[in-house]
Amino acid sequence: MTAVLAQGLRKTYGEKAALDGIELDVRRGTVCGLLGPNGAGKTTAVRILTTLLRPSGGRAEVGGFDVTTQPRQVRRTIGLVGQHAAVDELLTGRQNLELFGRLYHLSAAEARRRAAELLEQFGLEHKGPAKEYSGGMRRRLDLAAGLILAPPVLFLDEPTTGLDPRSRAEIWRAVRELVSGGTTVLLTTQYLEEADQLADRISVIDSGRVVAEGTPDELKAKLGGDRLDVVVHDPELLATAAELIGRVASGPAEVDRDTRHVSAPVSERVQALTEVLTALAAAGIEAEDVAVRRPTLDEVFLDLTDAGGGSR
Ligand SMILES: Nc1ncnc2c1ncn2[C@@H]1O[C@H](COP(=O)(O)OP(=O)(O)OP(=O)(O)O)[C@@H](O)[C@H]1O
Ligand SMILES: [Mg+2]
Image (cartoon, rainbow, N blue to C red):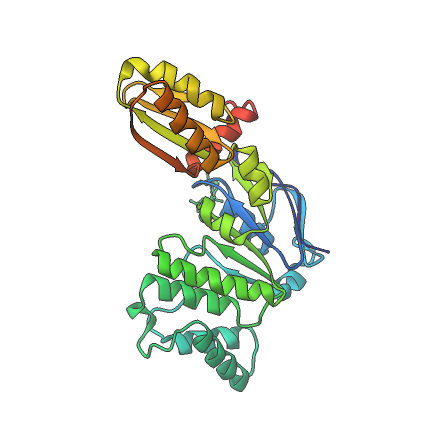
């Protein structure tokens, strides 16, 4: 069963296409990660799917309802935690949640009961107004407000941008709990790691288009997985080192002469590291530093646009 569907979704502002034909198919009870840099079109997509913005072309369905022709049914199906906090600074967490409950047409008693439940679940029993909250607490309060009605489909626009690792982990835990209860989640993020941690499938978007789609493992395999970095002591030996590393790597080795770096994608990180160290030692090449690391988001996009023959 499909929970969120987008077909050829477009949004233009004058000449500029913020969304240039987005395709999405999110199965019920799963997490879809929309991964992309600033300006990729993530918020635009979320705003269209949550009926806050009309598409210029294409179509979309949420929970089986069309976002343009059945917006009221869609709104009854979803929760939204926007990119910017929607809580009232002067109210306490409890007052904010009760207010949201009333906005969602709960009775006063129901709103009080639901607020109390969420305050406990998200560790938000602070007595003072929301302006005294830390960034992590505010984000948790936003999330709680989006969950007043325990929606079947929840949209989270960059839920952890700007949070420290601990607050981020708390949000991740809350999202996983919701999903285990059957909620479908579409979340946007700029962090590869976040998509990796939470999403069943990831759509990488750039300049309003989906440039890659798949499970985290599929995408990593497509992108060549981890990268091996070696700093070679003697610049004269860079070319030889690059050739040796290239034999172990899953793609071409890149050389940066200024920093004496050789970098290459590898698929089996431990094996590749061992083989490269052995080969370098056998050739008498001294390495100042060796590291295996995940690709950065920059490298992901560079790889994707290279592979697609992109014009950027
Ligand atoms: N109301 C608008 N008028 C004109 N251009 C807009 C408008 N809203 C968005 N855009 C443009 O559309 C593109 C996509 O914006 P969007 O906010 O969807 O990006 P995003 O992926 O959410 O970025 P971020 O990670 O910075 O939140 C950007 O180039 C943006 O400048
Ligand atoms: Mg955004």
